[in-house]
Image (cartoon, rainbow, N blue to C red; front, side):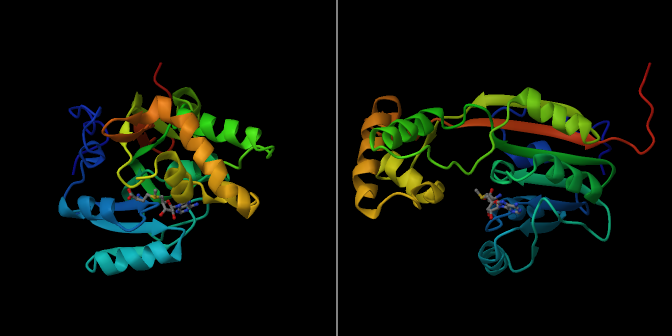
Length: 254
Ligand SMILES: C[S@@+](CC[C@H](N)C(=O)[O-])C[C@H]1O[C@@H](n2cnc3c(N)ncnc32)[C@H](O)[C@@H]1O
């Protein structure tokens, strides 16, 4: 088992799969927080670790269990979960920015689930994530005389998230904030589909007869920045980090 002193040292994180930064070791106990349908959990398990996937959505946990019969999944809110035994690592892919109620509470729960020296490795949307998509939404909402659209995410700056991790009892080993333009293959109707899939809550208070013209306007506004001949590209910005839980009772070095 790698110790927290040696972990992370040799991985070039930028662009590498998150599982390589996590570097699961055979026999390690690892939580996949916000596991969704368990794709990342399965990658971790392939390296020989024992994975527990936790997700707040019962339908996600049901689907993850069906798709990955040998793995363990449970329903739980990341703000409020506890474990009966200490884990070697907590990992989270594309989920922490959905946990908006209290990011410090999530970090505290992760800390509580880890053994001293245990790893917390994650990737989430960082400050500036989807800025063009969000600006197009906000302009279109204004043009149609609607209030500000309700956005369901938390996209922290690296400095902000680093401070939260350090205040929460972690030592940061790596923190990256990088553009990751990504083809919107799941969104043939571009920004409009993206809102339908990822921000349906923003449409709840929109009068039904305005939804389609509003989404058409979002597409017109977003197209110059995000539409290529080959298709739509989302302006993703990712925050990726690797941290370790400080040893209990550790005293700062001089
Ligand atoms: C975009 S999905 C990512 C799924 C998975 N990690 C992956 O890489 O495919 C985000 C997941 O976070 C979960 N989630 C959001 N808020 C949560 C919370 N407070 N507690 C636990 N899970 C949460 C959602 O239910 C969803 O399954």
